[in-house]
Amino acid sequence: MLLRLVYKVDFQLLPIFCAFYFLSSLERSSLDFSVISGLTADLNITTTESQCFAAAFYFCVIIFDVPSNIIIRCWKPSFWLGIIMGVILSVWGIMSISMAACTHFHGLVIARLIISICEAGFFPSAVYYLSFWYTRREFGKRLGCLWSFRCLAGASGGLFAYGVSCITITKHMHVWQWTFIIQGSPCVIIALIISWYLPNDVKTAKFLVVQEQNIIMQKLKDDVGILNYKDWSWDQFGTVLLDSKTYAFTLIYLLGAASVQGVTLFLPTAISRFHFAKSSVLHTQLLMMPPYILAIFISMSVSYSSDRYYERSYHLIGTNVVSMAALIVLLLPIPCIYTGYITTCILTATVYAHVPIKVTWITNNLVFSTGFTRRTVALGVIISLGSVGSAIGSQVFYDPPNYMKGKALILVFLVLQSLMILLTRYCFDRENMRRKKLGMDDKAFQAYKYNGEDLAGDRHPDFRYTI
Image (cartoon, rainbow, N blue to C red):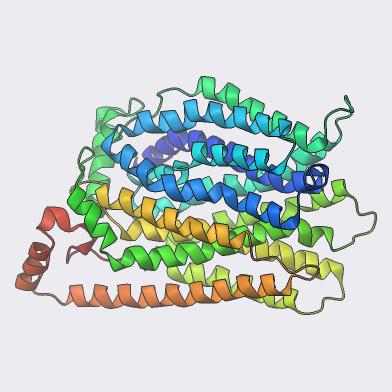
């Protein structure tokens, strides 16, 4: 009964979020292929300008993530997500189409900034919204499914670019221009279809009968305690900013984001430099597909395993170890291009695979108290500040032709992130053991210290951190 109910929620909610995330990620993937297809050459964009263009997307994300999560917490989630996935999606599609009309670098940057404003806030809002439908043991697989559509966008971007490259109906349009037009048009159409479908919470879900709503509510109460979907507390907002976990997770997220973005932007260049037989632009685009397809399988497998064993940190370390081994191989002279390509595929897949586990770990350990204020604010702050890493990652590969410094920097990021993960795990484990030994009086005092049992949340003496 319970498993069937969980799958029913999956069927109603996940397709909407996955489809939107796929479309928004396709724009970023297509941009990588547009570079290969002649964007930089046609507009005379230098390498430095190309890096700045890639980083421009994250500036608005950094600014708008936290306000977006505050709005979704204070307002009805269905309304705000409806705006993000409806009205804003229309603007996003129109601006994507408009990028085809750009004739210089500054126009591209302006269009890119507007697109980032439209997309900012979706990922932390989606994570927050989905988190109050699933228990901590169930959440990893669902987030892995959502993230796999980001990987799917990377994989299908190659096939998409391959098809666009075959367009020969006009000599007045470049391949990269057709890419932006074709990818933006469906977004405008889908924006007209998406309406106020999403429920605000479990109690208002029309696809659930009352008995099913009560079962889900009880399941969530057993997992995290008191549920209140209508609260907002500025005091709880302040506790997030004073919580050391917030900054530990921010650093973990930042270092991971720098690695993911660096590898993503390096991938087209790396593959084009392998000089396969009969190598061409189209061939290079097709070779971009296997790394992301592998990333889908590894992301889903690691997410499933993480939920199965209810363990996060060692799964993160495992993916990082494989990524670091792949980077070490790429730093060495590689006589065989096939070895280099396979290693690059493994690096891309494992760097991507650690993202859903990382976000799940953060969500598991920032639990709401009387409501969802701490979780929604923490997700906004961590993902917003962590996006600085994405901007940094877009700049690390600056030393052609071998990019040794860029690879070394990504390796350093992964090593530092692994050390931070181990330190955070140690602190959580130690705190769990301390709380386990507390007597009744000590538990009452700790709950009182954090304004009572209803407001303590993840700081409650009976709460156990997920490690």
